[in-house]
Length: 287
Image (tube, rainbow, N blue to C red):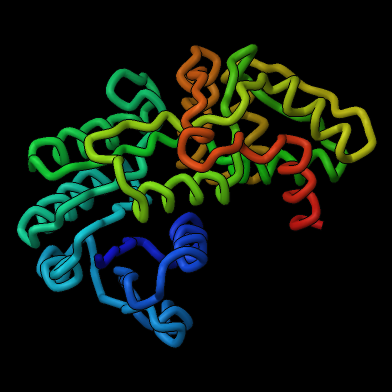
């Protein structure tokens, strides 16, 4: 059985590949990357490295040839770009006769009002239309997304948010990667949807947990969206990113990520890494 991971040199893809290599032979694994030179370390370890670019569909035909189980890791970029790229990847998988597609999606993708959800909704629909057995891994929110805020707190700033009392199921990338690897290398996952979420927490609860790790009180500054945008601008965030961050805060405030689930435990027999342990890990990496 030959498995292939797209985006294998990205932040999530790198961890997924390392997790897979703990349980499957390198000869069973292939990766598809835009720049094969960046995956030379994997080639040396026996992983087949293929060149595949979601913007060049002709490269995907060769990249996906002979693959039984495919993991499509969602790409980066604006919604229009991502939808085009994902559609290209799904069409190539169908042409190549791939037998199973796992896809990293977003919480409650079919109904979510989070602006990022459109990409995942369209991609999931495209995969279902192929008739190929699938598994959608709907990731809630990476704890690593909060690194800038954690760094700010370490430097003495408050935890700034306009998300109100909205709850988020934060988890480390390594936990999401373990779930993805379990599905790609496992059996019994045909036509499944997994809502992958850590323990639901408010911004105040996360900041309090961070304070415990740091051994100091963390002040939470709740502001409105306009003030949040001004603070982000003052912190040097690029102008084009600010509306994205504001919309994420708004979506959290409105409950877009407030979906409780034990699917992590279903997939690898344990809950996500406890938040205090996860924050300690990130703080140590930052320091």
